[in-house]
Image 1 (cartoon, rainbow, N blue to C red):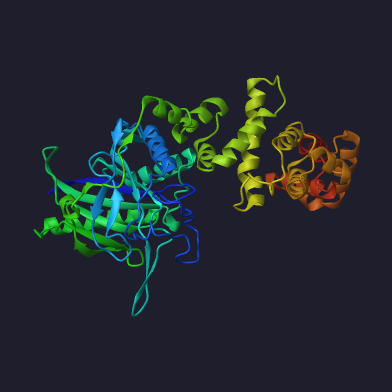
Image 2: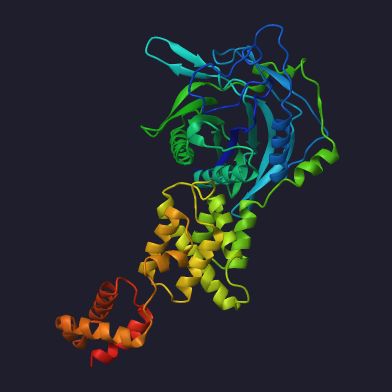
Amino acid sequence: MVYTVVIGLEIHIELKTKTKMFCSCLNDPNEKHPNLNICPICLGHPGTLPVINQEAVRKTIKTGLALNSDIPSISKFDRKNYFYPDLPKGYQISQYDMPLCQNGYLEIDGRRIRIRRIHLEEDTGRLFHEKEHSLVDFNRAGIPLMELVTEPDLRSAKEARKFAEELQLILRYLDVSDAEMEKGQMRVEVNISLAKKSKGKVQKLGTKVEIKNLNSFRAVERAIEYEIERQTKNLNTRKKIFQETRGWDDERGVTTSQREKEEAHDYRYFPEPDLPPIYITPETINEIRVEIPEFPSQKRKRFKREYELDEKSIEVFVQNKDLGEYFEKVISELPPKLSRENLLKLIKLTSNYIITDLQGLLRGASVVGEDFLITPENFAEFITLIYEGKISSKIAKMVLEEMFKRGADPSQIIEERGLVQITDQTEIEQIIEEVVAENQKAVEDFKKGKKTAFQYLIGQVMAKTGGKANPQKIKEVLPKFLK
């Protein structure tokens, strides 16, 4: 039997706000001291009243607009009732039938993945399980939590992973969340079923299974692949697929049964009586819309069109937004009135040095902040010196390291350290003559047709001049001494 894989995602995202969702406690997910950022409201003490965090509402709407969603004029909060040790009130303030965003989509490889809804709720506390007991930290309880639910439009593990990765990028571009999965700021849950297919058409959707505990993109992809294999095997041997929640065991690479899946009515949703409805005006939507920056997908197309970079380089600048912005600032400082051909050569050179040499010096650090000392103007001057042949690639590495340490301008470093490139032909000829005399075996090898001997001799000239000789000049002059 042939099956079609049907996948939907539920993704929880912790929002970057100063305070929690319904109280004035600090929203600090990195706080290491347990139960520090808490108050009677987020602990659910009797008699307390919640107040809506307006910043969280605006950031959810901003996300919805970025994902092509409809923003209704009225939204409201609901109580989702269930009992668990990390939920101090015995219910979670969430949204049910009137979410802030609905009917959106995100394109992945030219295919629209529909987004059913994006709603806002409060996060729960965090449990720590010891051998004989469990501990609970309520620092996370009440943090604004945005939940995005897709339609079951995804058809493979790879596509699901790509959706989550692109969503993370968009959230970071919007500056609504850092969305770091390893810190729990973005949590992915997968709903998956196998549908029977006959004569090219889906006959009937299969039983849906939910997978939790996915804390990396790799885990998302692996868990789906495993579950496809498990369900296919069960269906082919006529074993029943149960509607349940399964956990992902990353070490063993398997999903394991946790509990039967609850239906929405099991949560006994009803309107939150302590919070008023949210009225969203067209003026508010327009205000938020103008705050939306260029999207990753738009940047990819623009970088290809304007800079003609290869896809791999473009992806580096798209994934690292700060590095991409720094690259563009450097480009804006390159010499004016260049031909398109020469400008593209400088752009390619800039891209190569930023992606390889500069990132090597950064070692994961950012180009944003007081610790990074190389201005775009100085980097553009550095690139121009290389392009004009005033410094060799070997000298360029030395100059860039010095720029990184001190923030000095490249011309100053070259002058201070006597690194000006040797371009005088007479001087180069003299050095080449010495090198040829000292390396007769390499000269003989070259005459026998060994091309590597020529490169070896160039290297010897560069070494003798401390990297200051112009490589192009050496290539032009050296053959005269090898006849």
